[in-house]
Length: 146
Image 1 (cartoon, rainbow, N blue to C red):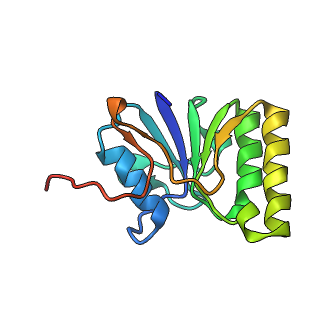
Image 2: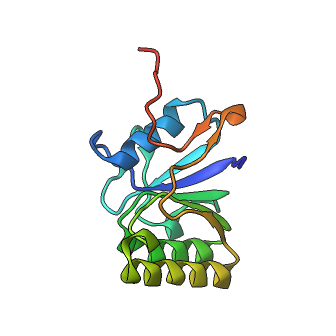
Image 3: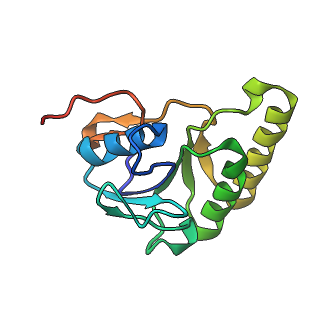
């Protein structure tokens, strides 16, 4: 994975949020590309302009990263498809590993992905690291210089 731009769903201005730690790893870890936080209420996250939805982004990002509740992922993936985003990382858990209802939700994600020709990693994955471009989408702590 070698994106030049990322749409990130799940970060906020609360450091307790798992998605926030992942967004922090992207922003402070050396990634040089554009990062577009998506948040329905926040106007700015970590100094970056936040957008209320995928559809309002100024460009089509190379990849969407999702750390949002599992019930919100299908609509987010659908919006990615409508926007033209063809790659996603779905870090969110609560799918096949949770039984019959989770399997149904996961199957629905596959149907949406097929409809829009989206390739995705996940769901319930740890994220992606590409050290060559300073990209760390995981929640693993990174030691930053003060």
